[in-house]
Image (cartoon, rainbow, N blue to C red):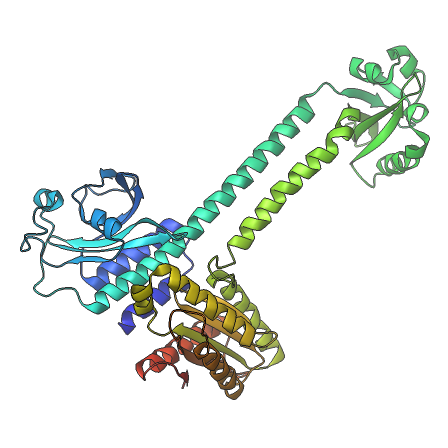
Amino acid sequence: MKTRLHELHRISLVRHPDYASLYRDHLDTGKRLLGMPTGVIARIEGVTYRILAVSSPLENLQPDQIYPLANVFCEQVIRERRTVAHHNIGGDPTTNQYQVYKDTGLERYLGAPLWVNDQIYGTLSFSDTVPQAEPFSADDLEFLELQALALGRAIERDLQDQQRALIEQRLNEQIALFESAFHSAAIGMALVAREGRWLKVNRAMCDMLGYTEDELLEIDFQRVTHPDDLGKDLAQFNELVEGRRNAYQLEKRYLHKSGSVVWALLYVSMIRDRTGNLNYFVSQVQDITERKQTEAELLAHRSQLQIANISLRALASVDQLTGLGNRRAFNRQLEDAIADAQRSRHPLSLLMVDVDRFKQYNDDFGHPAGDSALRAVARCLSRSSRAGDFVARYGGEEFVVLLPDTNREEAMEVAERLRSSVAQITTEKRAITASVGVSTRLPTDPGIDADLVRLISSADVALYRAKSNGRNQVVADE
């Protein structure tokens, strides 16, 4: 089982380029460790199931294929809401009547539900056309359930990323639509001489300011600029003349011939002759008087989209059950902490905390009670940890506590306090205990990448020893 746990740990540390490669890694690893040639991740959709990912020599199994959810073993997994194991389907009269056995000769099947956002999302299964003499071992079932738990968390992240991408896409579409309408509108255009005199104006410019073309050509732009805006306009205009910039844009007020104020968005660029000397300026002037009135609404709308984006990013770093940081947040925090420890030459310790016999707790009292117990443990760890420590849910019933500037002896004291605090929880269905593995990075240890792996793996090994030695205890790495 230790090798299998290390494989799951390896998958969690690998930076997969996309979710498809992550799913493939899970399937290939499961096939290899369980000794079965076909692995399938399926999404349940009403009375059908769709293949999300598959690794199999069978060519008739492909992603996005849809099958009826009837007379197949994944239907049993969904119906019974538990792991299903059949080691000799043909030799069992309760299973050899399944149509999938008659059609494919399936002899071995091991499948578990995928829980996503506290609901059964689909199944993870491995199968073979060759039976086996003995039933699947408890280690086989536990490994599959741990793998299904990890996949469920990955699918949650996948769905969150898709939702965030959809919001970003909608935001970009709205901005593009706004920009398209902005630039395709009929706007004022003018050619302006070096001294500011109008050389040529279009009809939209005349209509905007209330002058005829001849009237505008007799004056310069300074004459029709609001006096309060003339200074900033001339300052940037002169920078163009002096060659210190190639273009400028500003919002300014023009004075209509009638005396009213016209708000405009002005963009000015230069046209040079073949020798590089300044020829004239091109002014693009858009009437934004009405836009000014609606600008507050537009900004409010953009703000709401930004808040939604920020919320999605927060969701990607927070464990929704306990409110603690999730594994992604922990990994970022760990990288920063190791970098800080290297700079400061201070020790860094890591605690891995695992709730003892949690699967049995879930089996005895149900998943809602199990969730309540995990929340209670999370609250206990947060209250009992020190200021500056970082507590996160690592996955399932496992938590991590990052202890900056903490040597092994101090880490053991903190770990024992946390273990004792968990044992004193009285709000749940029965007493809860936890095992704790401790690892410490010393100032003389090597670089960041090595530390990331060693800190976690050492704490994991220490935790395994604590569990093996009887649970409800603290063990440090050697």
